[in-house]
View: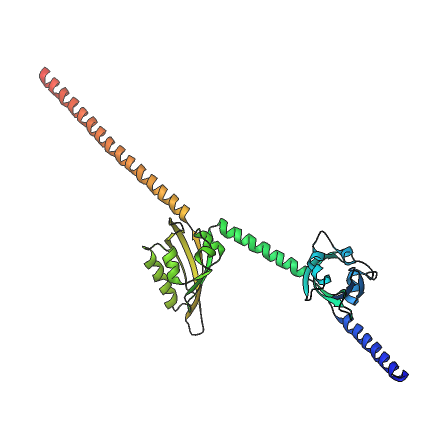
Length: 314
């Protein structure tokens, strides 16, 4: 190779390196290279903006926040195993803020196939993590609220005749998706498992009304008896509304069930108490009538005796 060709190749390589750097510096995600000792040897502009200008030569763990098993998760990479490794790690930004980074890492090898380090990209997912946490917290609060209120939401696909339930719904019936066999079951299976046989016609009629109604704002509230998973009888209040398609067909219903067994039992107990009190009132009334009758007879008898005595003296 003559000097001219060597100069051309060197110039082209430098130009490529400049373009490569410009491209990586435009990327919003961190790109970084570490050696076998896990010290940073190169990073793009996003990396310097996150870790600071003195990041080169620093070990990656020096930016870790709190105890974590990040190294353990990527150990196979440095032991020669191929593949891309994903790990999430809380790290300290140059302004001192604690941020959650999602890393994708792959091994780097020399011409002899020996591991020289790793090349990684990282994306700041802190805000996503906060949103997911708020969502999980909200879901937990909703779940607890539904359980405390004895509520179980559901939806019904009228086209495919499938109910879709969730854990709070199954909890209402003292069972679980695992015991039932999943979160979707047919209307016939639902009725067989959970609806009291004497009330099945009532439920069936309401379903039929929902399917046949012309009113797109159709809603309904009803109460009926249920069968808990253990065989005991309970009571629920059902509230639901429908969704129609462009042709006016009911294609879906959404509803919520509330276990009102305790309320029904209290009502029954109050009715029993009321019946017992009414019996006592009736008994006292009868007794009072007897006593009043006796009193009247005594008065009548006394008056008769008095008349007889007066007539005898005359």
